[in-house]
Length: 78
Image 1 (cartoon, one colour):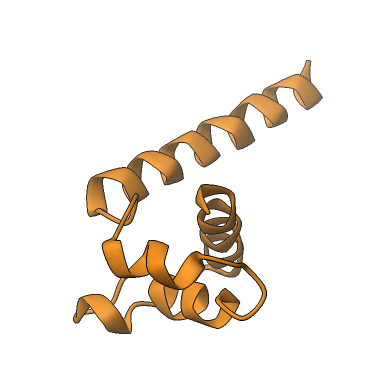
Image 2 (cartoon, rainbow, N blue to C red):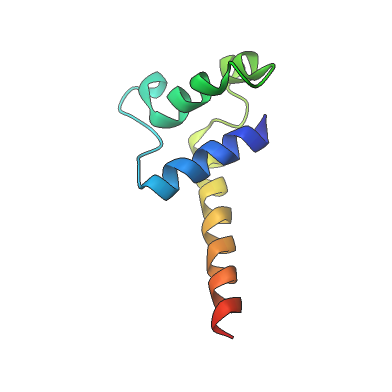
């Protein structure tokens, strides 16, 4: 489930879209995860319980993704 969340976050970041909305359930990340419920077993209950969907965890995942991109760019420059 976490892999699916990271994939969705990467997609939204790549598109330059906001992850969260003014109302928690209306954010792009939650809506994209709900869309993926059809092809990922158990995702609906995972979303329901909010595992790894807190603001702090999402921000940490975004930071890890950005650090990974910076490292890749530095490798290309060297």
